[in-house]
Structures are given as C-alpha cells and as structure tokens.
Image (cartoon, rainbow, N blue to C red; front, side):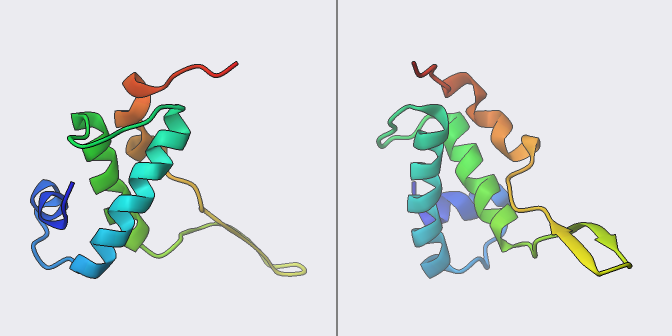
Length: 96
C-alpha cells in the first residue's frame, strides 16, 4: 500500500507522504497483531480500508471523553473506535 492509495481512499490529496509512509507500515503491523494474522502485499481490501481510516483517525487530536472539576480529572480516548476496526473483523484468527 502506498501513500497515494491512502490519499485516494480518503479523498485527501494533501496528506503528508512522510507521515503516510510511516503510518502505513505501523498500521499494517497493528492489523496483523490485532488479527493474529500476517498480511503481505497486496493487502486485502479490508486491511487497506483499516489502514486508511487509521491514518486519518491518528491525525485527529485525542478527544476528551470525560472531565471532572473536583481534584481535576481528564480522560482521553486513546484506542481506535469500532468503526475504524470493523474492516478487520473478517481477518481475525483465534489464538490459543
């Protein structure tokens, strides 16, 4: 998968190629670990979709999910939401 593929899937031609080159490698490895599976080029369609969505999601600022006033407490969303992980579901393997 190339930065051009991600840009086309997301319809965002101005994304940074340096970021995308690194992110594609990281998120492909993440998908393999998450699915307990190994992926090589060409990647399956669902994995390509996950990588593109993960690249886009990672560019967003981490959202505050809760905030407390007394003794100040913040909680941040640090994991991928189900909508980003959904394309990987068919590729998951059980591990024993």
